Image (cartoon, rainbow, N blue to C red; front, side):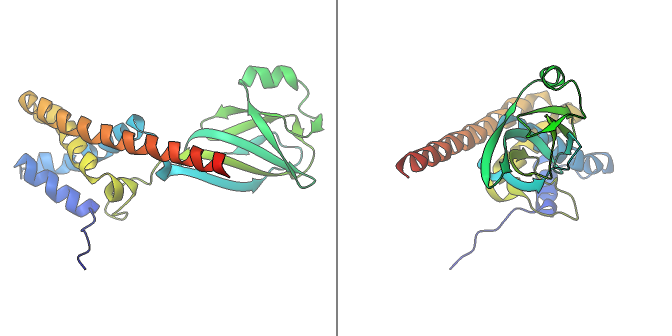
Length: 211
């Protein structure tokens, strides 16, 4: 049985160098930047189930501010467990929470949450107990580098990584003539990934309805 080769950071760097047909130091030193930019663009272009993450933790009584997980990108939902029963914690604007619970020392079961800043949520009312809670969120994929050779992108979207990195290299190399080529290749792969993701979501919803 033949096992398909998995793209790694090192193999991607080598492929980019080969496609660009450049061996000068200035270009080679920029390849990690091309890869980093490609990862960011791909993450913005698609929302894939591969980085949909569920995390359970506990609130801290008397503290309405909750740390977001590392590499948090976007919250999907939150719920809190009280006396064995789960209740949704609903998303609202920061200003709404401040108006709803103007006294942060008044404690209760959290009903709402908001983005406090990029690394924290704010809940209201202030937790009256160390409530267990669960949050579903999109996680930023661990970036590629020499110490992290593979991630979701290299395993499931290697073509997007290659074409995306080559596309990011074009402005640096001032090679405008090649932009349409890599843009077309990249767009085709991204559209295919989006179609697969839509199908996964549809299948997930259908399974949920069937059960």
